[in-house]
Image (cartoon, rainbow, N blue to C red; front, side):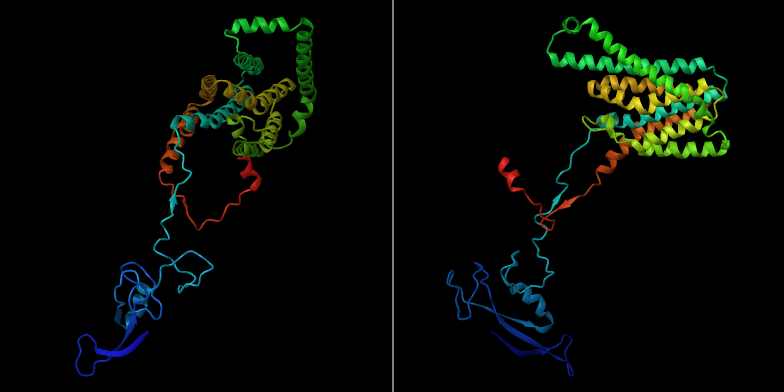
Length: 379
């Protein structure tokens, strides 16, 4: 329903101007109610408005045809006069920005970051004790005292957290009443049996370490000091980067830092070759087992029981590491304090600042998520 006719000359017309073709096209839709005209309609049956026609130049044909086309619909069963890559004006109406955004609490992130800084402090304690006893002439009895204190602190923390959790779950109003009630259920025989089991395990462990200390001391003795120092730095870096920091903050997550634990034990074996006596080797291995293998489990139990006690333990460990480093070198102590401050406070602030620039978009172009019919019926 269109006709073609010549229309006047171009702008700036005159002799020699080119004539431009024009098209007369009947309206396909009523501009008042959107009724789609049929081929034989001359009047809109809804508003009784006469069907109009438009005259336009060939150069603007695509623009005017787009205005006269029917509205685009997102359906596959209907043939539409649009390209396959057509983008409708309503394409972004269903745009959703940051649909699952959750605002973080600064102090909550700080408490979670303590797991990283705490393990760094424990690693520094291990290295500082080795350097003090091996290069600064500190007597081995101080390292023995440190191992005993770490072991006693770990056992006390595990025992106190277990008693506190049992007391909180039992519903007994006071701790003294709970202890009296539980003590009445425990016989002397069972207590002695459990105590003997723990003592036997500790004795076998210490005996095995002391027996193997001559082998461990000479295992890597032929390796040069520079190579040992370089390998210690590399494997301790691997230990820190691959450590399972989620284990401390998790509830029922199993420990997954096997690579980290093996790297730390290898570093311990390397350092034992620089020791002067078998007793020193045994003390180094005991300290390594307590810090790298047992300490994460103690920290986790304390964290699950009380976050206040967990933060206090972390502060004590930071202070101990800072004191030992200050004994070795003041610059190292200052750098350690800066790193711990950056991990604990600066990194969470940076994370919260970056969060404001998060722009995750969702819309109808996303892949469909299949829904299990049985899960839907269960809900």
